[in-house]
Length: 144
Picture 1 (cartoon, rainbow, N blue to C red):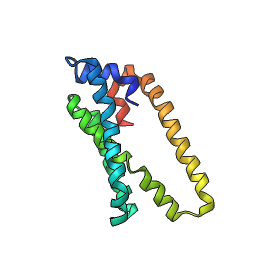
Picture 2: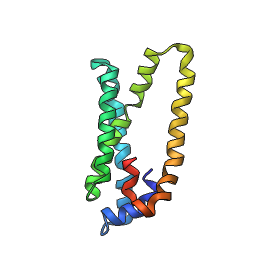
Picture 3: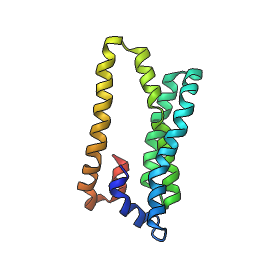
Picture 4: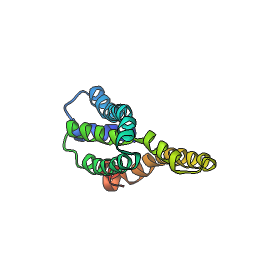
């Protein structure tokens, strides 16, 4: 969701930085957080339970988006995006939780719902943001 707004984010958060370096930081910070979380979320959920880890991830994810919307420079933006990536890396925990608490026959339906929602969000999110960009600016994307 950052890709369509990269030029505006760079202009606002890192106007004096090399555009390529700034774009790399903007794009990779989220993935770095997701990578780290993917490695630790499974063992953590095995130790303390899937539900507490999942709920904690939702709280972190929501908080991180409000922080990203209020980032004051590229360093704060990257840090807050990495935090949201940490929460996104908990997706395997959600899938494990669903598989443990749902009927086996219902899992294809839940898998379809998860895939559809992610696809809709990734495809429609940037369109909605760019449609409202003139009125609200790039920070609007993180307050939805």
